[in-house]
Length: 598
Image (cartoon, rainbow, N blue to C red):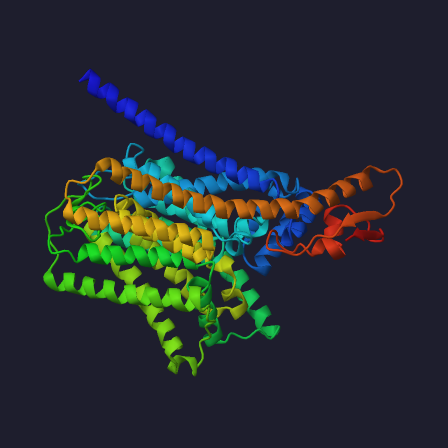
């Protein structure tokens, strides 16, 4: 008994070290790239206002209330940017690490009585969930990252509210029934801040509250519905602040002549969320995961709560392999449901090949017009969108019912709702990647859960690596991806004729594919890091010149370097004409002559 207890604690300590290593490496990477991030665009306004002192804070909060309703976010930005960018360079990596932690918690969580609490740290899938969540941010395309996580104003408006929403949802589901009074007070505080954060995050928070309360009270019958009433009241109270600012913003947009054209808004939403190169890696991974789930659920001998690590591949040995005996139950799926799943897998597979052809090969631009709706390409796009979204909703319901994975369903519904609510805004906002970021965060949990489920499936891992390499459109990566896919197919065909395959070879292939996927993510992150470093050189030069300007006894002119506009920053062109708010932020007199080095 003593030996078993010692072995258990040794194994748990090993897992804990691995998990902390993943988080610390991710934190180091984020701290590294944040060295080359500066104040951009709206950051300059908030940093300038912060110089007025705390006496100005009430006026700043009132301005936020009347402009967009995001009161506490505006106040937090004023306080955080008072020391200019230095505090943000530390705060943002910590928030990102917290977001990684919560996403991994959601992906590894299950209510299944056959596998216990998946959120526990001794769960073997927990470390892999952390790795997936970390790689998600490293793989994030620049067009999404530069306006969501590497820009202070957008991080406060999109990343931080979503981190708060995710924490609130996880704690609400796991703590509302067994938590102490202090934890319930914490939930009330979180509910208010979530509700009063942003339009999207507040509505997502309301969605989580509604779905969790209905699920736990009416379906699981764990708690009476009245337990959640204080949370509804507090969250709706917070959301009234957002509604006040939103109505004023809508009136201002209408006065400015920015009318909402529904077809244009839907077109931009489809392009931004699905038919765009930045979204392609995640759409491909979600579609691939859906296909494998459909094939798995169409197996004649499949048990409803069979281990999710059972692989849906070509060979019988792959079908029967289970990486971990977490999910076991004896309720088989019906024949009609299995046939439906098989047909859906075929349709989605064909649609996915069409998606790859239209977007990655032909790079056809999509516009939703009455003429396009009657063309082959337009109908193909609509068909893929319908199949893609239907598969997500259907599988999230099935996984909730069969595998007790509640966050997959909650996140999917909220992700769709967060985009549907944008049909009332101008098409310019619907086309921004920052407004698709909350939905992408929510849907990422589906990807992580699928990776955990099929982590022993060589074909799934190889296809995932190949599709991500294909979406990046780099010939060398695509070639390596083709080689990995070919080797995986050979492995699957070989295992048909030899059931007792080498576990060592299997482990080697799994590790190789995992390393290749990590390499792809690091390669993308490395390119982003290099770009921000190059963009930082003239900015650091200019900041040093401004410092010398302030240290000089007699204020003269400024000699600055021009900063080329790029995605490695936001509004970098401000350095080249130095608008008044930028001068005020850096304490430069309005009449100071400024010359530039090309």
